[in-house]
Image (cartoon, rainbow, N blue to C red):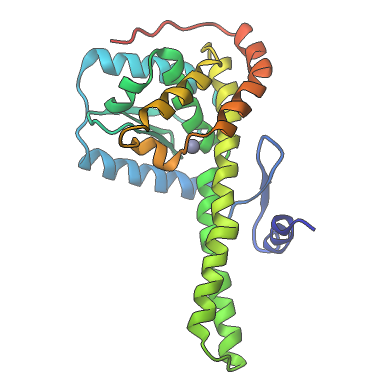
Length: 262
Ligand SMILES: [Zn+2]
């Protein structure tokens, strides 16, 4: 039996197991409300910490692209309005948070050559929210802690020697065997879901491929922040190329926005 399915069956006794739109089993221990609250709090913190761009044209451009994408986000992901903030920073970064929050750093606007490439970034980030990836990530962290606590309790009962060493080894296995591949899986899911989302929103889906090629070029110097959490690789580009026929169909059926890059 698939280990994740097994865990899912155990966890189902406590909470619910969900399915992502690509049909993957998910463990989500938190409610949408809890996640939204966490997202909103983090966003408010960030707004206090970072410099917010007041440049009118830049804000209009980002808002225009984000609006087109947001229109096609299922209400189940966020039912209220979305807030889009441009941060005035050289950081090549962007993110979306549960609770309807999108942050775009001006640094990434230099890497994205046009509205389609910016839509590829926003689509990918929003896809992480649609597919409840942060819920899964937080849930697996929580389960790792519960597992470690349970393991520790059992070992104390049985008087196991070198308890700490065993616990450390256990945690390391959980980190690399469970948490790490999870994140790669989330990346490829966000790539595919994001590419469909941008296409549905009227942006050329092949721009997602051009974007990652761009990113790879950028990383020759000091790698941008975005790449430390989103490693650019050949698999990613070939997956997006393979999915292009499907997303092209969605693009053909869409209305193309015209957002002017300042
Ligand atoms: Zn990502």
